[in-house]
Image (cartoon, rainbow, N blue to C red; front, side):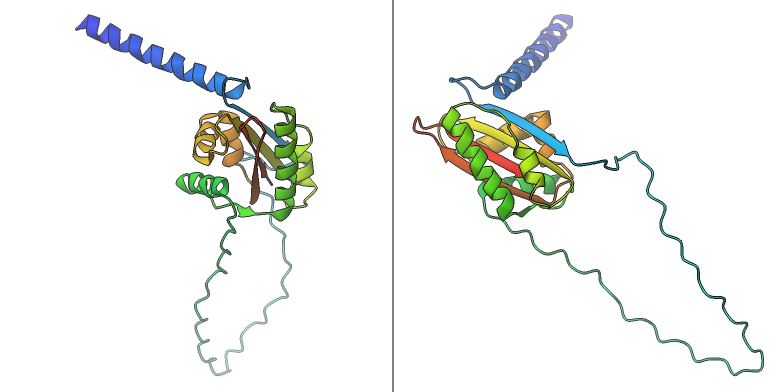
Length: 210
């Protein structure tokens, strides 16, 4: 029985080591394997999850006159009509990768990210750049995302796949990497994605968040 338990523990240890090795391999680009890299940037100070909520503005109300005891009671006010908060507009989805990102966010109770044409221009430029150089690197992606004026934080996920365009595979790789996962689940409202296939058949993807 002890031998079986020891062997079981050994198998788990081997599985964990293999998993970690796979993630490490996925995050470092080489000509024989897919690669990933993530970047984030925040503009100015932000309120973190542990920061106290800001104090709401205070109002000074005019004094309420005392009721006249001889006046007839006023009729009861009509009940206000039921009001509903305005519905959040549906997210515009323009790519498979974006749809997968929104599925991931929904599974964790987060709202969808809508498409941004400005972020798409950044994504196309960065996908073309990494495809042309044949390796993954971040230059000014998040800073360019911030220039779209969509928020105070921005992030970028980039990756490649030797078999060309494969959204499901890249999404799985992004979700398995803590840095890329953090961008997918980040405090963003907009996203855009772009693929470029290099002459050697490799697919390069850039995902821009803001």
